[in-house]
Length: 256
Image (spheres, rainbow, N blue to C red):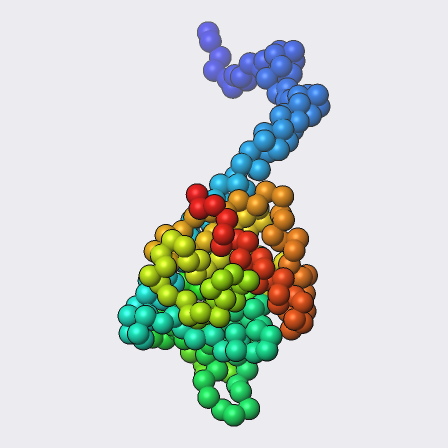
């Protein structure tokens, strides 16, 4: 006669259970972490370079949009580019050619200057006056609302503008800038007011009168090192002359 009863499940041998529950050894974990660290060291610089390359393309696209607006302005104003009151100072304040709005003059009048004269009329958005690589005190998100609020405070862009007349030490100095000079005319480049305004570390984008853009490489940071560290120092005539000289060197550089 068979007796029905509870039957306990058979348990695996202690040795087999130990083998199934075993994990990674400390040496294996250290090796894995070392491999991950090496891969991060190899991949992160290339990822940063890819992101910067993307920002350069956006910067160049923004410049082209500004160039189209400058062309439209010229067509409506007898082929003349937006007037830059700062160039009428004695000596001209070339560092201020990055400004879109000046402090309100004591005699009244328009606070918009240079590229700012395109705002709210020839530009659908002020964002194209800014570079995604900018790391200084004038990012686009901090400036956008000030194009609409009627403020008379100083407002800077991220690009350096040629102004309405030549200011570099060239035979054309003092003459009006005209778009029909085409590829011989540089209209915009990276910010040159200070090192903080210099958007890209190893070069800059340039916009020409024919609305073409190119990348001007400066791997040794020769341009950036010639700029003052503090934007306030651009009020001095020596710094203004240095920026004007630098503008001439960049504009005469070989077009790629």
